[in-house]
Image (cartoon, rainbow, N blue to C red):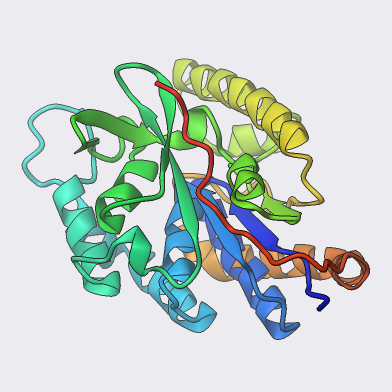
Length: 290
């Protein structure tokens, strides 16, 4: 009996720019295209996790718009900070997500197989999170050092995975995806206007851009290795900051939707052409050896 290809979706990190993933999901849903496995890093990991839990795209969008309000963000901030080591406390973040998906939610409970990317802060090694409790794993994948308090899982201090694998397309490929869609929402290094709009002090701006250059090169190499079938890079605009722009959520979502419409003819063609006779197999992503 013929079947459709296993479709994997990898959602990249990018702060507020990551809300474009909601637009991607909206377009796929409107065309009746179901995702068989998911991966994500940072904001992409958050949205991938909510999707894997079975939340509708409308519910995810409502949540994004709600948390984007200044008052909601303030609830997650650490009022007890005595030194500038983080802004958002992990306890508040985990309480917030537990209120949405359930405190005891496990990866094994998910409706769609999921793998999240984090980094072991002490060893500087990539870590694939795909088993155990979901809420701490989401906290880990979004734990940008200096912004979000780090989280400890199995004795390891874990932080945002974006520095080593910002768009973990290789995860869904090893999970069994026969067609891989990757969504990269990071600003391009060449976009000088984006970096100018960040309005950071000279040293901070230079450091941020240099770090982004390294990350972009790593991302490009990872995407090539994963042999991504469809790469979506939404035209979000240089005025939307990674760590700001919370008043531009609608614009960002629309950019994700449009970019997905642009690949839709070729995606539908690929889904029709690549039919298989074998039984689909979705397995865990390959673990990273520490």
